Image (tube, rainbow, N blue to C red; front, side):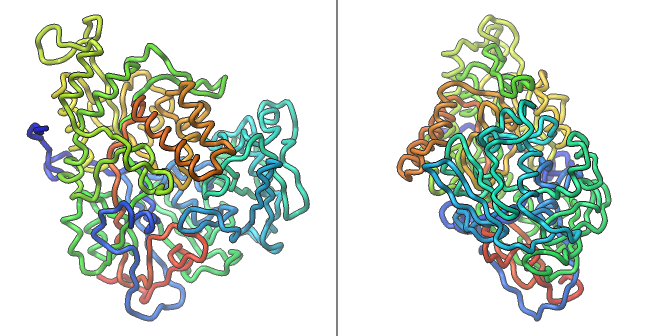
Length: 595
């Protein structure tokens, strides 16, 4: 197939706006990298020099927008806030390089598939919160009850919680306790589930992992938590390696070592996490102003020759995508409702918009080959269930035109743009978040590609939208948005239920049907504990997602992290068990960064 000439706007010529709406977490998987990365760099680095005692590390949160300032995992909803929260908060469980839970960390899990229970036991009896108060299993139980509370304002209430026996009655106020939460003693709880799920064995899977200091939040109304100083300020109490010393709203957080951290005091005294624009990060790293930063792929040529840093990289567990507004989230029913009369309801129209995009060319021209197209909604990062044979939306404008012709979208008046099936004007509103200059170019290229197949796609509001505002519009089902470009950090559990299930608040396209729901149920069945069946069900899901085209995965690729040469050791491993690269383990070899 002969490609048409592409009209890429250069990143330098494009309007320079503040970048990426959420910071990228540089902790990506070196094992996944071996299978799927096109990386130019190694997965780990050791620098010369003898570590000093303590010191302050400066960590750049490379993002287009300020952080919103919610610093507990139960309520944080974007990756910038979550990156900060991960240092002051703590999951109950640890996992290895393959994302499997290891029974190290705060607690161990014993699964009983036949009796549909999970027994969670604290691994020690002397844990303390950062304020010195004892941590017991009551704090874990409290977090489960908090997320199940009808007044809870976050996005974590999903199948992981509704699967607990008695949760539905508790959530609806029919019971004052969750019958499936059985406290054994101060250090042990047995959870009873409606069904056992294979992802209970994985990090971020189907076992609740959050903890909350009951001694603090029991006295604050649940609906007021998001505004509490124990969520937003320097009074956040956690189990993580650091505590918050000070906050400059939206800009920076200074963390100090948590003297009560259960793994021992961090080697660093302080960590300063500061939001830095992607347009400024190269010059900031060159000047030695930060020790660690995830670098924008679009600026590879500008940063590749810096001499005061070393680069590490791995395949990132995240992707960009195009999605279609196909319904709404019904709060009363607590589920997504698909509108059969939505403007983008015709699957041929959605598929055509996917085939119109040359994502590999975008990755090469705008992102120096560090980002590229993918064939599946399940990433190669999930090498155990990813289907490399899955057909993707490869660039094929002729097929796109054929699909539109067959669906009845034709150019009636001869102006080069297609009308609706009834002959009325078809204009599609497209929304995208503000990130960096390369993204501005990509957004304009999307519009050109769609115009080439005869679609009149207009940028909603005439420009990209600040990231926090963008996601507010998407989550509230803004009726003016027909199509949008966004991104996901996928976590470590590929189960699609929490992103695309009927009750998932993160199902932003609002697309559900019986076929997809049944596949999700199979993935979540005890039958899927069999590895071969699990792979079979995930292949079925990937084919279904391609066929229905409610979401078009676009860019995937490498996360490149710059590490200043005063940082003794750093790697890209995702493992939390025996990790040498988490911030509490890092050391510096001098008081000032290398310049």
